[in-house]
Length: 128
Image (spheres, rainbow, N blue to C red):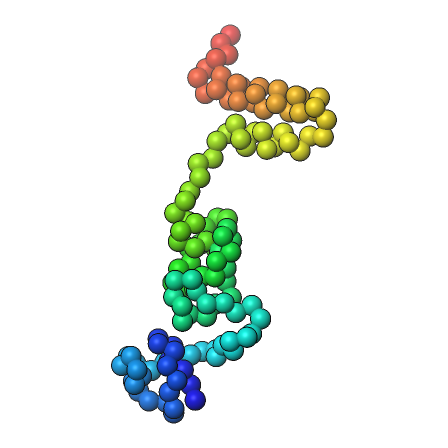
């Protein structure tokens, strides 16, 4: 007994068309046991078995719902919520690696001087 890959109906034999959905019969490539470890069903497509979860909200997603991004696989809802990156936050996070307050102050001074020199270089601030 096999299952239709479109509607997951159980079919005896190998007919040309699925008796339930009427589409061309393509057997399910990998039958999924209900209690198998690591197998989930997509949160939008309830009949679609998957082993992939969203990297942000941990919801199971099928290939139809999957959005590939630089940060990994996301569901469509999480991929829609793009958070802008602020340079002040990036500099602060980089400076958080310094262990002592004195090292953090030095890091902030280096970062500020880098930005100032970048702007001076772009706008010709050094004239001889």
